[in-house]
Length: 107
Image 1 (cartoon, helix red, strand yellow):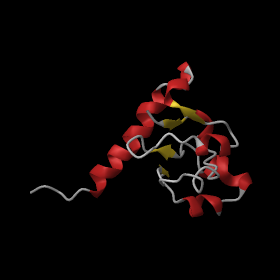
Image 2: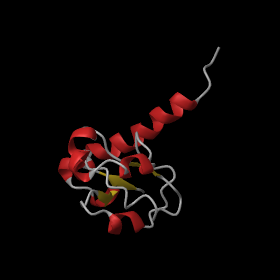
Image 3: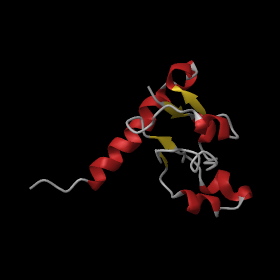
């Protein structure tokens, strides 16, 4: 079981959840410090289509991130609303893709 970041995070990418994670399992396509430097008024445009993700393999289900999220985007996977079920796979795929990018090419 893990927590999942869902649709309310898209184009918001609020990083309040990142520093409270005791296992550093919340990441995105941009580093948290890079996101925090984007002015609030420019985020919807500059972060369009982007979100943060929770690594389901690393998440220890402590729930610290859920309480910090100002947009209500983080859910225990068992409580993920039906309309956002696809975000379980979206979160996992982000980390699978990152692992593939970092893996040395096979010869």
